[in-house]
View 1 (cartoon, rainbow, N blue to C red):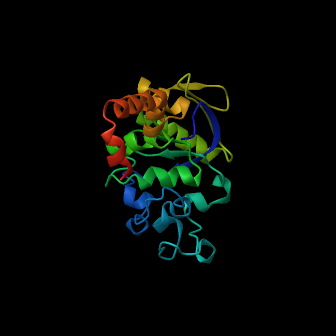
View 2: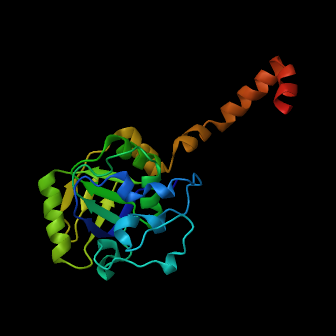
Length: 216
């Protein structure tokens, strides 16, 4: 998993409340568990005028010019500004996969659905929850200033605006540790690879008949 320390990025505004995971990545794209290739279908039903299907050539699609991510000023955005209850609906882990594979590193919103919130941390995305009034001011600033960027400093737990103003945010210590070090669940386990190998060797030495069963 890609580590997250300090990230500066262009901000794209998703000015809708209750964006659910089926809107983030529609159900027809859930057939794959390869954890790759979902970025082109992020927000598929809003992003394109035609219906998308797995394996479809993206170059043949008809983009919706009114959708925020298709507007030239937001091309290359890596920070998503959203309204309350972002990521509600089903618990599909494909939703943070699609957001991360599109290029987003951070999502800022007044609130998130619990399962989506947890899945973000497990997949290298940083969800930041801020007061609704603070988020509303950020929406106003994004609209007023093309090319609006923010710097997310996770070690210091602050968002730094272009004028130097800082907005503090909370993050649970263990989740912060995992993101800063780039540890997903597998990465956390592999920190103990030497101990795991030593345990397996000792177990085989005590019960050599296991080796035949494992080989079979």
